[in-house]
Length: 430
Image 1 (spheres, rainbow, N blue to C red):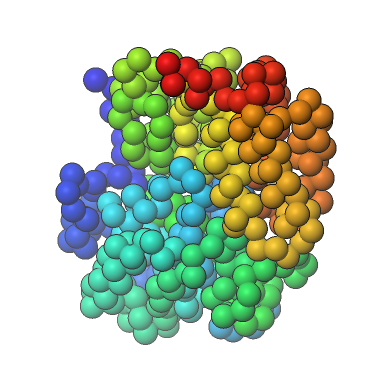
Image 2: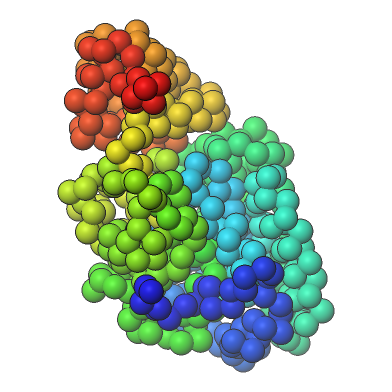
């Protein structure tokens, strides 16, 4: 049996249902809200404690949460907005959905405390349309929170008023990019917008707006209730802080979402918490943080899964969505599958992304289907560099699995070219 670490975000996890408001309160829920908002503690103290905790954004970028809230100038106009980003449309990523189906009130309380830190009065919970069950759960529990006095006008009898609206997305991957997300909420075409100004200065309807990931916000009540040092102590590495929800899919015995100390080694996640590789499977590679990260190889099997250690090898933790591939997987085919997604989801706003991603997809398709040529390999490397000239991070992220395919598995790509087709399909036919 795997070692059981203390659970924070999943402490109220039930096998077949969502934790209730009463169950959340029994575990300490809303104590932080009562202490800080109800007790009139300064919003600046919320920012200070979250900053000292080392909480980094869990949506992929890893930006310090407290620093983002502090970026809202004191002189900013009102109203000020908060957005919880649960677009979560990248292949392999499902942690936010799991969190909402486990304990939605830790997200709701976290949103209220985050908004309090910069005097936000309204929040939008941005959720992808295929997450209708998550949206329904949240709307039900928001109403329960209002009845209990934790949301709405004059929360707990104070001067602070705050409420949350569930916003169902139109359903495109680009909407997960913060500035495109804000355009989508305002009913505009969801194109990304380059700063300055930053959303914390001018966001929704030209007013200050903070965008945070759902998992980031869920950590806030626990930090304020237990303190920054406690949060840091949860990490498996000295430079990390807190726990992390790892979403594991692919060729493992027990795929799913597990909460572990951030920095838990990849080998431990797979061998202990996922029951090892699936029967007959041997670890070949994985994407550590979703579709827009680089492949990890057996050489990296013991790497600590945190922001800093993956950064040292030129990779990213991203959303910690670990997609595991075995020796029978054609990684060129897997990369092509991802590129089909990224090319389709380009908003078309800039040329490198609009034209570059379909070109990369076409070259990969031709190699996979027996039409590959030797010059396609340097062409793909050139395109991986060119898409970094795009307007937002979608295209550079899409290039990550491609460049790592060529860096670590170029022999496999060349084999497709020399054999004029996929060698893995040939093995399957026999």
